[in-house]
Image 1 (cartoon, rainbow, N blue to C red):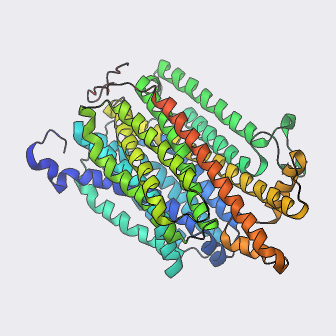
Image 2 (image 1 turned 180 degrees about the vertical axis):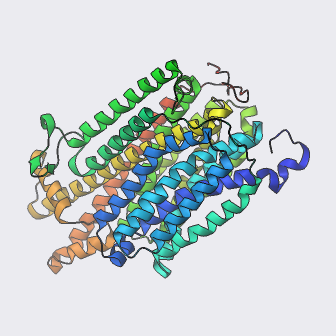
Image 3 (image 1 turned 90 degrees about the vertical axis):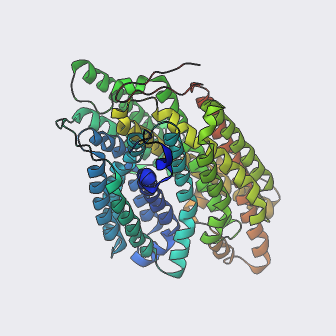
Length: 554
């Protein structure tokens, strides 16, 4: 059903059922990751594994999604949306059941990281396609705004749901509970129009391989950077007894460089395929569309600050302030509610204000809210004090998300909606990987560096600098994990009673200082997004179904 059905149809459940399907499917994917992050300690104890193994499983899940989202989106060209969504949901259910019932780490890895990751890579691009195929005009903008808010809500309440289930039940309940959402989506798929494709299956093998290798090496490089450094090696990287440091640089920067080169080669490959009339993974015309290119650049930049914010705030609230996972979810609630409400109600504003200016205004509000958090951040920060800045950030994100999704997706023909959605989601995953890696390494390096400075001043009355400080930070990271409040207290409990309280203050103050610096870094990410958003056109492109929309310049 499209907006050509007038009158009261737009107020009916049948009309909005496709948007509910898209939003629920998207919520499912977001919720899955955030719940697992909170449940890591419980899973480690239950499956007799290690934190490093769990972080590896989470990393592989993200890598599988980032690598397969574009090929997954391309499947829409040969399989209708409803059938493809049902298949991906059934595969997702198998992975969820296997992971929830897993007796060991290997089973969890296969069920969650591999099977669920593959299913999510196919499912997520379909969410945008569903909106494009079922709505037009203001209804499409409103639907895009709503599912954009759903992403923020899933990110915000995931830790709270995971914390409640883990605290009062089991981490397995969260995985089994996802089956309920799967059943809801499956039941609602009957409201989707089934449009079987008469196109023959043709696979761009070379493009698929290049895109997967490029994404995997880039994401792998960001994962290596947290431990081995971004440019200068923090630790020796040894494989089979051989130390690998080409030209004295960290393996992370080399891995990222190779990934970027592979993606550049991928673009050239697709261009040659198009000229020769051979199968394509991504039509070059899509990437050359100015509005779409500016939109995906803005999406990638947005992922940097959103992932950094959603990573650093829970860490700070739980490690420095001692909040539970449930309290952390409450702290983020004003952010998520404001995002959802504003993303929904602001969709009609484009009739009075250019979408580009709404996006830019949202980014300015996010920067203002983050700066407000910087000013408030200390060890006495309360839930009430966080309401206003969190809400301001949420209002800004709500203004940004709904308009940007609609503006970007309107720049491509309806027939390429799944491919375009796959590109957006893939670059968003890359942005999330980079944002989390940069923010995480910045936070931990700042935290341990501040601990070294504080302990040195406490013990000797002087400070250390340069290589000596760097070596001490690396040694402390290797020997002590003190990023949670319980770990901090366990660490200082090993010390003489007369120094415990003073050193505990040093450790917690170190996290407070590091968090302020991270929030300022996230403000820089927002400003970078503002620069990217300046490339967007002032006027929304006019779509002609099945053809390339007109791209209007400023």
